[in-house]
Amino acid sequence: MKKNIKQIWFALVRNFVFFIWKIFPPKVKQSAKQHILILRLDGIGDTVLFSGCFEWIRKKFPDAKISVIVRDYVGELLEFCPFIDEIIPWNENTFTWNPFYRLNFMRRIASHQYDVLLNPLWTHTEEGNDMCRLLQARNLYMFPGKNCLPQIRNKKNATVAEVPQDVVLEYEKYGYFLRAMGIEITNEEIFPTVFSSPDASKRIETMLAQNIPQPFVAIVPGAGTQNKIWALQKWVEIVNRFISETEYDLVLLGGKNDAAYCEKINSQFDTARIKNYTAQFSLTEISEIIRRATMYVGSDTGMVHIAAATGTPTVCIMGGGHFGRFFPYGDYAKNRIAYQQMDCYNCNWVCKYESIKCIEEISVDTVWNEVENSLKKISSEKILKYGISSANR
Image (cartoon, rainbow, N blue to C red; front, side, top):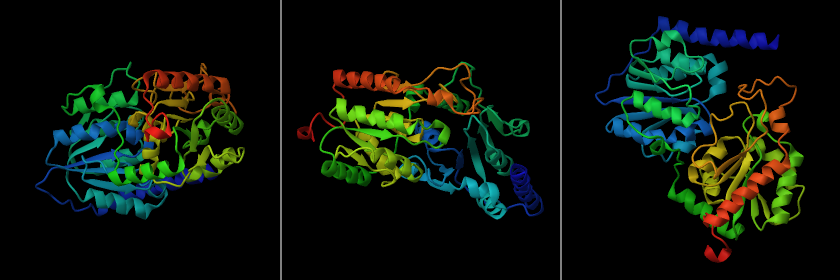
């Protein structure tokens, strides 16, 4: 019953905006300067995956104003990106359920005439579809992916970036998107990156020098959704192995929603070698901490993409919902995954079991084996990002 009420209200909110739009269409401001709008209506990891494309879009439109719509908590990732001019924060939950927020937001962005509208989401969303329908743009670029509406795809101004079926990795699909725009690049040229600032870098460098006087490993147990989170006791065992079998300090990281979970892990130990920094730093500062880590060990969440983009070796505990689509990429020996193969992989996280078995059945030994292999590679190549001892700092 509650689900049905929510569906009805969602439909009313959408139709309210379309109804008002027909009666009072927004006045569109013309501009002599080109204006590019990019819809990036997804999460942290997705934005990181797309990050390597911004430079090439700027090169294609060197004199244009480039605006990006992002979720409000993701905007900080692009604050120091030199290739965009405007970040437009967007609150997904309020946009979905509040008709006045939705209308005002749409009318505000629709007041501009866009020369190019980019919707580079493989899995189309209702919000993105509505924006593509209502905004005036001379050229629209989009993917033919899941939930792509024919009435948008068949618009005269639409160019659809076709992708071969054997291309699975999300960030490699962006290469086809840019090529559809007439930008010829290789996958290596759009490898993800993380934009930061000298101030954030200096703050984190100072903080680490004062608190962690030796190489450390970033531990990120949390995830954006509960179905991707590994069992608490298994995380405790991994942390215990690091403490007992290596000389690395450990730094627990995550957002506000991860604070309680990380504190439960931290409370199992009485040692100065573990620092719980969950929910204590901004996204930019967390990126700088991860950049300096010897290794990232964590869940399949946005921070694993930050780690890979900054060059930090990773061990990611990976379920089967989108297996192979988002991670790993780059050097597979450096960006490692711990997983439990099942015949129901790529279920889009619509699990046929009562519990998420592809996460639950990943053993501690499986994860630790990947950790040990990664540490061996790090040691043999002498690529410790934070120095071998405190004397190197």
